[in-house]
Length: 390
Image (cartoon, rainbow, N blue to C red; front, side, top):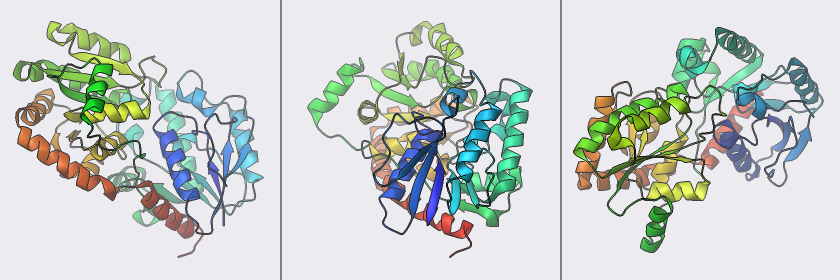
């Protein structure tokens, strides 16, 4: 069975790029009678798994450039991708993210993964103009109409797809996500000391880490607003914020976050913007963290939470979206719109070493429930259902 896969997001650092690369690698590792071909708009910088085919459409503007918000994907480029997809002769065409959807002009079944309904729930936080939102709605409508089935990554997202996008539950397949093997527990004390030194963390610092983007629905400003109360109760608390701070993401609020972090004198040297760091450094930072703090208003899955859990790090999680489904009993929850509630959960964890140890153990036990191999197995089942097989 020949599955063609849109790989426009292949080189994206995290998010849809991470999902596409990890899922394709897991699919390619399974000897279950499927053959895969990636369709890229530009020649990829990152390697393609052995045995996976590659076709480069030669679009003039890459999806990566469009994702920065600097320029929209041109209609001519979408047409180039559509024609290339039609010429692949695949049994099924799979979009790992509706974000990069384009019409497929061929009589081939289409399966599209819609990760979440964040744009529909929070258009004012996601799109800088109503015109951007209108284009998104048109693209989503086209993807729904052409796709024989819809894939998503959590039960929470599946419920939202039915409630907000009116997709019948019987057309939706739920898979999962996993964490790269880089994310694991480190027990070597000299290694942990070196990690702290590399990030400028004192031995007594109680480390809180945020990993992710800075779009407004990520709600990082509420986390910064909670820090004065956290520092009043726990003066050794230190917040490390990991993510791209160059302002190149689509409509992020990095400048606002940096201004908030320096507004209070107590916070000026207790909040660090680490920028983007490689996975092995990120895993090390999670290993020396007391908790990952995840204040997002909505997530389709919440991969940083799972990566933290694989490192044995508890999660201070928003009580919205998929996060309770992923984190389970491995964290504490709060209303993400209430900085006082966020602060109270954080202070509770930092003030109770026994609670922190208990949550860390639960994180280590729960994390293996979510793997990329399981995601690939569920994706294969979705491929078969899309083709009318069982």
